Image 1: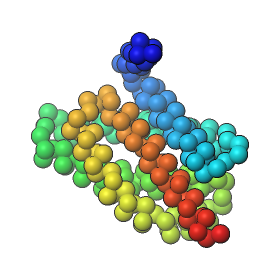
Image 2: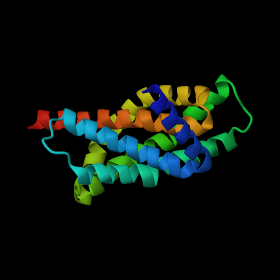
Image 3: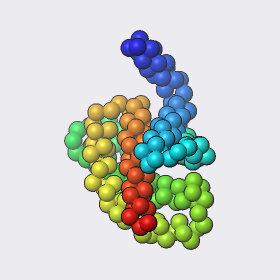
Length: 185
């Protein structure tokens, strides 16, 4: 079994080197899709909602993978050649003040409008109501992820690491939304 995993990893690394943007986009899509499958199973779905899975995969492929690819390239240009704890801290703070609020807001709008197919007025009210607590929770969790990512991950693995943790974050948000819905029922 370990030979299969090793061979798969080596093929992944070759694709990452030859086609970094495409590989990161597909990786992000597969991870968020997998996260949604797990969330659906945990919440007791009798049948998987494939449309939802595909729409979330589309989000990962078209937005979060490419965004992460270009964002991390930009961060390395901004802090070119600088290393150390101070630089890592600056990267984390910059990320948390810029991309974190934007990404959480965009995901909430995409999920409501596209995945759930809700009208703009309902989505706007849900974002207005839920966004502050989601962002505050994100600021408790994501700086640690950012620190690990910038301190220990080579640039080619940052989107993979962030996408993996992001799929766990999406699972948390999904289960949280479910628990709120159950309490209201």
